[in-house]
Image (cartoon, rainbow, N blue to C red; front, side):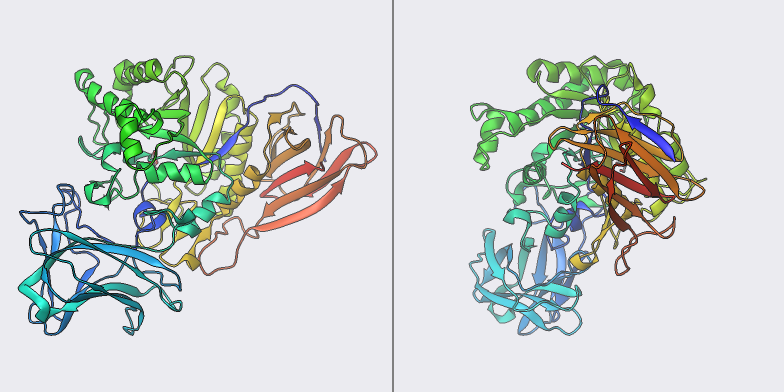
Length: 617
Ligand code: AHR
């Protein structure tokens, strides 16, 4: 057996943190975490993703068309849907198919829509089966509409039973003979189920639950590449994601679809509040994905926008942007510990200008106004000021991640860094340009564990790590693999093999690593203390052993007869992955181990397993 003795003092004292990286791709925000059920609710679009009637269908011969009225709902939402009664007679209207279906449960739905036109009857709103037309819930709202202004109509719907599947639609109908002028105009048609913590305009509970169960410590948001924008002008603008939904114009993201702006800055900050996460706020830095960069002269407006954003988030209500925050209902400021300048500025041609002026300009401006905020560079390929930190991203194959186990040992003189994105993305032997894995898979998850162990050993140099991306909407995605899979049906939500590995490691926090006998491969490990619980922790992963691997661990000062809990994860097949409707592939094995006469905890770990041993309290 490999004999590992762990000393009682020395080592590193920083806590390595597992966290989350959230950006809207794979319809993981819109149509995912953001609980809005109506797709294309306000007919938003751009030259990249033209406005359309996607997800809307007419009912009973009505005629739907997009209109840019001279009197729009708002300047942010200039396009609306005209519903002409057409050849229709009697009841006409329109339906929305949601984001590939609508989950209908016996629970309260809250909605609203704006209408303009002359109608004296009542609107009927309903949730119904797309297959049988059975209405699960339906309610009538008397029309307050007028031809001269947009009038909001609010409603609730409470189905009495669960629908058997998500093949459902949301419909608004009205009596055509009570319409004067032959048509009505609609915009911002919105419907929410109950949300996490019952937040208005909030988040989907099953997906937040899957994040919460990971026990994360930080949230890096809102990107990723998505903060940058495809071309100049399309960067993520914080001030266009706050306030009433009718004032949020949305934007084309870099992942193939238009964002509504509904999942905005405040909604994301509230997620950090609800899950008790440190925000790592990423901001655009005058660099776009088409390799364009802002000149030194043009950079100032970008930096000012970031300073305004920091004032909005953290400022006293006596400041202009702090007052704006208070006017939206949030008088207490939030705290920002880290701000990240851009994303992956070392690629897409960003590095030369990042080095020569962009990073430093942000660093200086933020530092002079907010000295307590740590400024993070979006790369580690830069000589940084002493107080700054870096961000290292790593997408690789299993052998590649295991080969990087020592990567942070060599970090000696470099600044502390976040590992802001990590995933085993390709099968062994494959790399960028080859087909990626569709789902996290077991050998990939074990290799991620090895990489995490390499980082935990260097907890004084590494802030923490986040798997990326988080979400894969199985109806439309462009990047794989991802930590969680889902559809409109919460019953389909899948916690991947990689999720299980993070969940295990994050559940046992080493607050102080300890010096240990080091002989790595095929067993990789870290040892330390949890000073809060007074326990010793040994975390390990076995990658590429020829059989079961015997291990013996002694902890200086831990006596014979002490009991420890061993938990390890294993799967039957290196290529096993979790998928909706299939049995869980990750097996969790628990046992109690008693320290022998010599104080040894002896046990055996299978090849491709991920383990934690914790001594009793
Ligand atoms: O996580 C997906 C993408 O990978 C991120 O947007 C980007 O930072 C990285 O290239």
